[in-house]
Image (cartoon, rainbow, N blue to C red; front, side):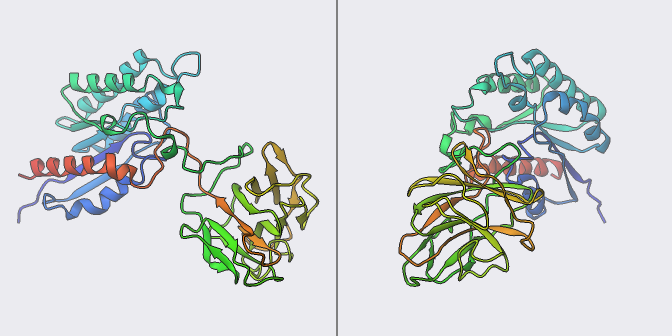
Length: 379
């Protein structure tokens, strides 16, 4: 029986393969690669991405890659983290960046005789990312370094729109209220929960807008979020109608036939009056169309309400059993009461956050290259 040599790929990079850009393309590749017709022998993929690493870090850690002795390496030069300049020069100078890349690639070539190396670039950035004005230059340097060493280059950067659409890097509805230090949004799949919605509360197709249709006038109701709030969580709600709308948090036991804060299982803020059910008055109101920020500290057991830079005193939630969820409700069924929530992590202007970004501009390139490499590996 013929035993074929294994195809061993190490993916060694920054947020190209790990972090907010990646969309987990390395694990996805690992899940489908053995189904390619070119996969005629054993396949191993090492996911060695480190979001936020500079070329200094990549050079310092290259020994871990060499120790694995992979047959193939996909790597990145750290341009996106080296080039930021906030007024005192780039984080890593071009000279150091180029020297680091030359040394890193040289260590791979010297430590793994016959290794096949592909240097990859990643996306462009939003026009707001003025600190990364030299990104294209740094990528050009990386390409020149790799080409000078006779290595392959997979230039994803060229194919990405330049500059990136801000709505696709910050999101179509970015947070209007700056989160307090340490507080952040939820994962991108956070929405309202269609399975935890009271009668008469109507959800939009994207599960982000909840309003009353007036069918249960005189009775409270609410809808909860689908993701438990942990750590220091921030979300926002644009108020559709301040009259009788209630915004806050509730646990799993809170009945959806009541508004947030109407029982000891939650806390609720009334935009029209500033009153907090379960706490003291916030000291401000929010009109229709205004935005209310909600921050929950599950360690300190406090919930805060925000309007712009104004922040209420913390309401104690230590008496609420179990995890809590975002909640929007009404204390009667007047039609139109409710709001639209923003849960997900805000973009940073650097990493594309719209669905399909990686599938459009990166993953097909990777798949095509991997299949050609396997075809050459097992002729």
